[in-house]
Image (cartoon, rainbow, N blue to C red):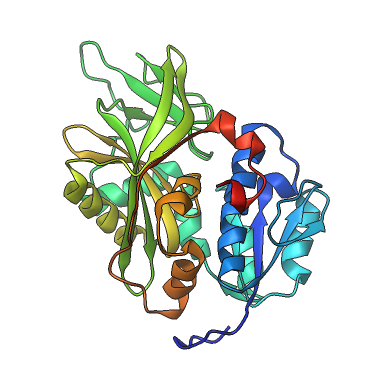
Length: 321
């Protein structure tokens, strides 16, 4: 894939979405399939050829390739003809797959090292704090908690979204987990693209179900008209720069006293399902321009879309978006 801004040839794109390819089942596969459909439809509308791995299910865009498990997923990345590609995989596995992709074609997503940093919630939070980006404060090992009633968020050091995240009045955590101070505020995410510049897409309200045990992500409102948009985009821009993000990324924040970063996704996120409904520009075109150069300064958003996870099971085609 030539770094030629005038390139307009039909590209062979591989979209490697792990959950559907490996048959993970559950909401991970439902969300992954919906994201894959949105991306594949956008790349095809731009005239590109799309190939994707699958354990069996198919979407109506792109060409499916049957694979079996992790080995089959990696084999697809090593062998499928491609000019460029995107990997959507569990954060702790993504760097390895990104390195495989980069050995064969243009990686339209995050640099493997940036993906590796973002996958480690402990080191990612520390890196952001060093860069003076507001975060949910870490409770370090051995730190004495302050006196009085306190609330903490206990979450896996490595893991996706709200999986195994719980709230507690105690900061003790099992091995492989980290603790942060609970932040009161509204749960939002910022979706953007990084290339030769920083391109804001949408601020989204996360539909979070909270009970005594923790949080569950249920869907998104895209976009969310926050009166604090300038603050949110400033924090997102600074975080993206500090972490060296490239391509599409999403940052989860709790907006209270400040917009505080609680998670960084160096990859396409579920919000693209809503973004593809409301954005006039093609997401695929912007993702390619992030690599080749020529990102616009802004995008056109028309209307609003709200979706819930339980609705995604019926989405198998970009036409349904």
